[in-house]
Image (cartoon, rainbow, N blue to C red):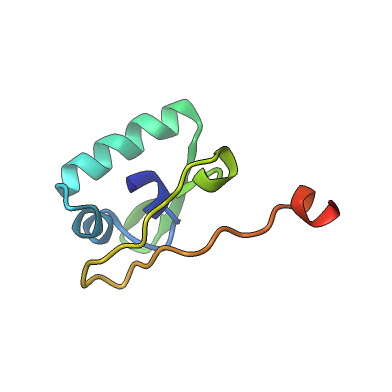
Length: 86
């Protein structure tokens, strides 16, 4: 869920509230994932945010809708170029 919410538009506090984990947990994941190359850091006013490199749905994972009071909502997967060709 944390990876799915790592869209580069939301900070660690917003993602932590939506995922129901601590802000420091989000930051630790992001630091680890940037070393693995599966998120990219984005400079924003006030710090750095991280954006996922791929959609989980592209690998067969189902991402549930978020049922919290946060502004973060799960989006339907975008069509990939290969699915449009078929």
